[in-house]
Image 1 (tube, rainbow, N blue to C red):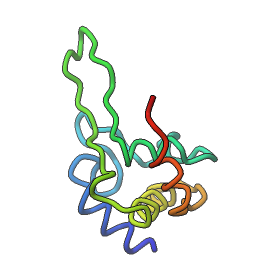
Image 2 (spheres, rainbow, N blue to C red; image 1 turned 90 degrees about the vertical axis):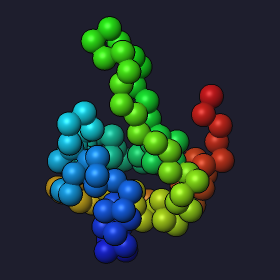
Image 3 (cartoon, rainbow, N blue to C red; image 1 turned 135 degrees about the vertical axis):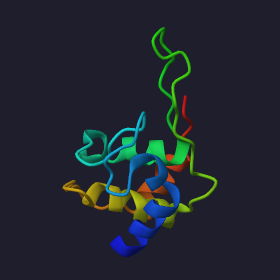
Image 4 (cartoon, rainbow, N blue to C red; image 1 turned 90 degrees about the horizontal axis):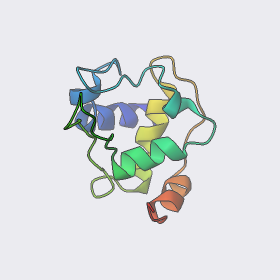
Length: 110
């Protein structure tokens, strides 16, 4: 599973978050990122599926955002990728199941 997660990470995430999850430029590091290692994986699932866009501020009027991957990854692929993120670069959190991904895929954002 981790080998497939590494492949998915390289294909979809590494260009912005770095080969080792170190983060690049305005894109956050995933290594040691608390949002990935919380007991409940809802934040990680939602961000992978729906993307994330921080609010604009005076100092950063057009912030960079993360695109959604719900149209690219099925539940199993998303679970494998998120499990990889939660278990790599010193992160140590429980695996995510495709059922968990599916539960949050079906929940409206608002």
